[in-house]
Amino acid sequence: MTDGETGDEFRLAYVPGVTPAKWVGVWTERLPDVPITLVAVPAAEVVGLLREGGADAGFVRLPVDRDGLSVIPLYVETTVVVVPKDHAVTAADEVAIADLADDEVFHPLDEIIEWTVRPGVPAFTRPATTAAAVELVASGAGLLLVPQSLARLHDRRDLTYRPVLDAPQSQVALAWPTDATTDLVEDFIGIVRGRTVNSSRGRTPAASPAEERTQRQPQNPRKPQKASQSGSGRRTVPTSRKKKGNRPR
Image: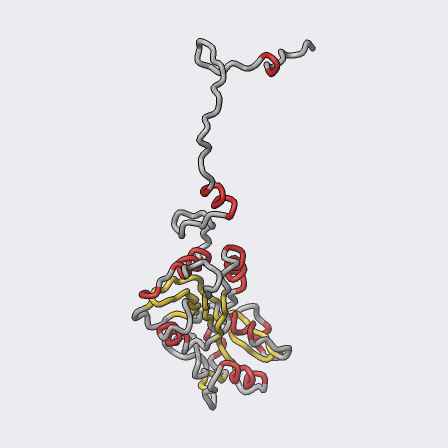
């Protein structure tokens, strides 16, 4: 069975905060016979999943160990600070790291942002997950800095967030095992890069059923009758079909 036939499947991994819906929608339109399966996986485990063959491609957060992987950086996310709604930070539309110097800041074990110097005062514990850290912020025990998509993912009525202008940012990328660059992977790369279905840089689009029928039809062995020609070599239009002159105005 070749790529694109019914029965194939494309497995797409994605880390928390990434929303693959728009790309999945395009895939469904272009390859309706190839189901796409979404695999949610923690950011720290996605590379291992790809190397083990658990997914054909995946959205990851950089940096990652690129050994054996092909990676296409896609977009950079703003870093925000998650705070209780009554926190002093909410008085401003955006803040700087220096504004958090006296606050306790949680750094969960699955933290995505890479810090040269961690902001604020170290909190009393390092939660195992970002979700657990959000619960602690809601209790008033400290603050949390995350990519904006994760703040939205863990949205709560009692919490809000503000952009931190000078904080390191998180970059999302598409990755896949280099030695497993299949036609379906190439198809998805084209979708993510915004290529049209007829783009010369993507795979050659499959012929439609109508085109395939046309290609299979044998040529008519009978030659059409030649129309009479004038000396000029131009086709002579039958008298009954000659164009009428312009009507008088």
